[in-house]
Image (cartoon, rainbow, N blue to C red; front, side, top):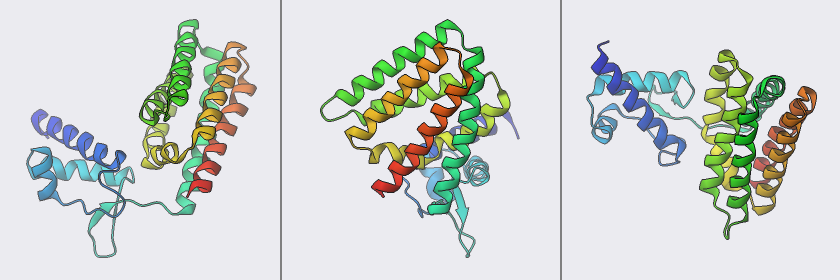
Length: 215
């Protein structure tokens, strides 16, 4: 694959994945090469490569008839996504607690202050909450210092189910999430790996139950 084709494929992948994450291409939406090529402004070859990547990452699935569509998730899929996140992010939090530099801890504190401000807004600023929440978790994964963990978590953290969870939160749910982030900051400040792991695991598990309650 030439560098130009690779760049076009990366752009197509990012744009199509963005449509899925934003909910503009909801579950079941057909992913047709010709239509997507018109939307993205590239030829069908990079679109085809982008769709292969999205299918491999489970953003897209094949119907019994062979059509490629945006993936949907049943109750078992949702439970598995959250179970895997709880295990992996719990491990990441434990690693981060033993390695986190002072400047990253300061960034986490500032990030959670912005989360609290988003939650306190009237109505709550869910878009800002989502952006800062993602940044908060990214900082922890970076501090864990494991390329393997980063790769394994990337697809799980970006799954549309995560975005839908936050959009279903009421203010009390958002406040609890911010409070749990504050507990994580305390665990990191204490360099307590077990506390960080337990808090992160509970944080992800509570998100699952909040999602189910709002379904």
